Length: 365
Image 1 (cartoon, rainbow, N blue to C red):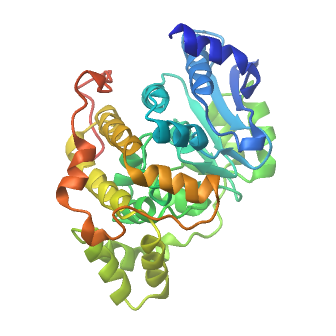
Image 2 (image 1 turned 120 degrees about the vertical axis):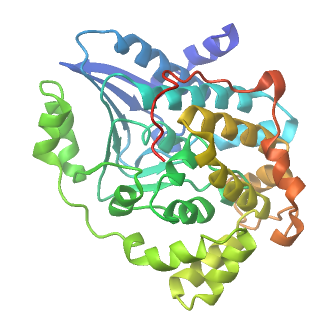
């Protein structure tokens, strides 16, 4: 860790609270006013805690949760990203480098990593939870990768997770940014178990004494109804098309009201972000393990920093809140293959190079 980030890290000690209770270690994201959005120093502090606990024989389980009752984490600090993109800064690229390393680490963590995905879990919040061993959603959960709405592309291993979803459900969620409730998060593989929110404190307490598997048996129940299962037919048909234009055309022609709504949703997103997202998802299967996918996402994120749509998307949704982004280019037809390919260009010595702990490991395709 360089000196500067360490100093920055020290200034915000209260944003990540660490405690151990019996056999369990707890990470609490504590920026409730910002819906626990992640800063660089928070990422570094989580990583340090995981290092500490990994080799501690007294710690059997790690639990991550969010303070404030509204959600685990609404994502990265996008005002900071906006400032960077506007001024040509490098802080966001440095943040993503450490954040994606952390995402990969969580996926390979040798102890059970229990993510309490209560309330809002978006973007970077998905990255610190959905790669975990035991991912718990509640009736309040809203899990989403809404990046295309700000001219960005799903990252933090989101394209990996969504490419693994059944049929084309992941394509639908990645392009529209639609939130998944508990049942839908379970269906698409972003979560493992449903526990009613009022039972989470008891579950947390029990982990101090018992193993995850023993505890889960007492708390897990059936999730209340989702919507995606009933929408599989039109989603699988429409999103199997080769281009975003063809997907939109199929959605409009399908005669299904929900498909028409999805087409209207896509019409409001960044045309460039939509095309890059589809290309990224389609390339995931050929890449193999999560580490390779995070490296691709890092290229895309760095390219997005110098693309007009990220600055404009954050301006419209977060800064000015006029909800009226002027995308450039403004239409899908004007985004050519070269415009998409630019996002996948190698970064030379700036590449994110993640080691894969066991290259013989089976990849779940």
